[in-house]
Structures are given as C-alpha cells and as structure tokens.
Image 1 (cartoon, helix red, strand yellow):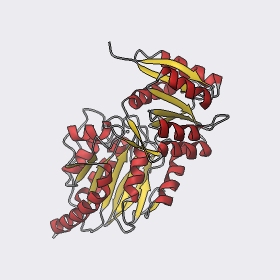
Image 2 (cartoon, one colour):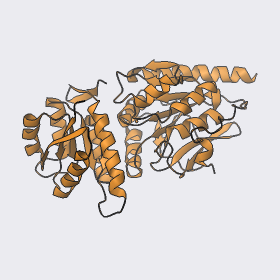
Image 3 (cartoon, rainbow, N blue to C red):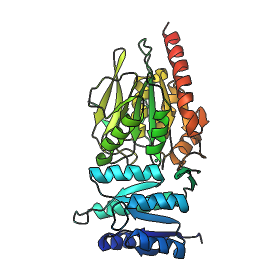
Image 4 (cartoon, rainbow, N blue to C red):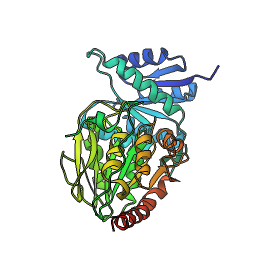
Length: 372
C-alpha cells in the first residue's frame, strides 16, 4: 500500500478548517495529521507532525500567511498550497506567496452556494496531490523549485473528432508570434521568461490557468517587471511586437489572421481540458492562423492541456520548446507534449527566453523565404 500524503491544515476560520479536513479525510491517499489556527501553533505542529504538504490561509491573526511562508521557506522549505479569498487584495497576496515558493493556490469555498463545495473538493485534492510531488529548496531567502467571433468547440474538437484542417498557405509577413502556455508554477515561470526578453521582441500571447479575479493583478505585475508592454487584451485588439497579451481568467484567447496582421479574439465558451483559458485553444488557433511564423512554448503545469495544440503548431512548421523537468514545478504539461512528439527542444527555464529569440528569427526568415 502506498504511503499517504500527510497534510497540515492552517486556517484561522474554524469553519474552513472543518471543511478542508472533511474533504481531505474522504480521500484514500491523504491523511490529515493536524490543524492549526495561526502560524505560531502551526510552527509547533510542523515540528511535531512532519507533514508532507501544508494548506495555508493567506490572511491570519498574529502573523500573516506571507510572513509565515517567507520564514518557512527560509528555514524549512516544503510544499504549500495557499487558500485565498477571491478578492483583489487576496489575489495580490497570493501572487506574492507564489513568488515566495507556494506551489499553488485554491480559492476559499463558497459554502452557501449549491455545488460549489463539490467543485472545490476536486480542486483541492488535485492540488494537494500535485504539491506532494514538488520539491523546494531555500535560496537566498527565496526558493527555487527543483523538480499546469469563434466557437471554442470549433477550435478544439472532442476526443475522436476529425483531425484539424491542414495548414493553409500564409500571406507574406515578417511578423512573428510567440505562443506560451502554463499552469501550476506558471506565474513565476512566465515572470522569469518575460524578464529575459528584450523590449523589441516579437509579440507574445499567453494562456495561463488562472481564475478571473487573479488574472488582472497578475498581468499588472508582469507589466511592472518586464521590459515589454503586458496587458489583458480586449476582443479584436491588434497584436503588436514588443507586447505580451495574457488571456483573462475565464476566457479563451485565440489569434486571428487579418490580412498580414493578427488580432486577439476572446471567447467565453466552456472550459476545454477543464480549463478556461485553455492552452490547447490558443495553440491551435496559432497553428491554423500563424503557422511557421510562430514559436510555441509550453511551461510547467499540471495535466496535459496544450500538448495537442503544440503538436499542431509543430506540424504547421513552428519551432517548439518545452521547459525541462528539473526546472518545472510540475512536468505534467511539458512532459505530455514531449511524449506526444510536439517538442523540438527541451530546455531549463533560464534558457527559454534566449532560445525563443533565436528561433523567432529563424522562423521569420524561413517563413518569408517560403513565400518567395
């Protein structure tokens, strides 16, 4: 029998602690070893119980969750899943927690809304299991990981549906587009990637699995840290070099060809691969409308969203990159893409930006030559 994942629940709300304990106890592979109402109690519980994973409330009395997490990652790095409120303040704090080394986060369940608790149960169990497989180490007070209009249905067919139409000949253009997909661990991976790019780089389109309340604060943070102009696009917005466009939470982002230019298209259709935005939706639109003018990048993430779309990009002539396992928080999405034969280069995160610039120049030159 496999070893159970030992979880310590830290939350100042007795109700939330009770909900989390009941959800976790129902899982055959998870054991709740204890609870704590604040970080001071939690500190003693960690020493006593040696848990594999913590769930940590963002806002708590006596010591806030961020201060506690910072101390924990400096003194005893371990997997943490943050439990956050769906507010702008909660989003900003959660993004800081991810920067400090939290593996992932979930939003607090709305116990007064029918059906929400069941959805929350599946999410928290999945993220606890994923966190248990992540390894973290302290580094200079921070951490480093050592180890997720058009019809969306027309973009990504159901399993067994007809294959995507063959790529059509593109009009002559020197514009390139870099398409990026990520999930678990992706907010920090995207940060490092964007910070490694020059201000005059080709346009970037990004699908990161993130709730609607969190995508705007995340985008603002990326804009403040990157040399690029980073935004959440509006429907129909032209795609320009030197800009990065991050899909809003709850909407699929697609790239549409408009003569020799490209536009962003937003679609609020149902989730694809259980996600909205979906990486597969973005990548397929890029394969069909940008073809060899694109570069595809799949970063750390849970599951396999993006693997099929990246394969279609590669089949359409676009060079493709996957983040390697050693630098990924979770090698689900990149690993699935590699297994599918969708990836040309597998690189550590700190080499991806440089490779993208090299491949973008090559892709642009080859595309123009092909039209002559």
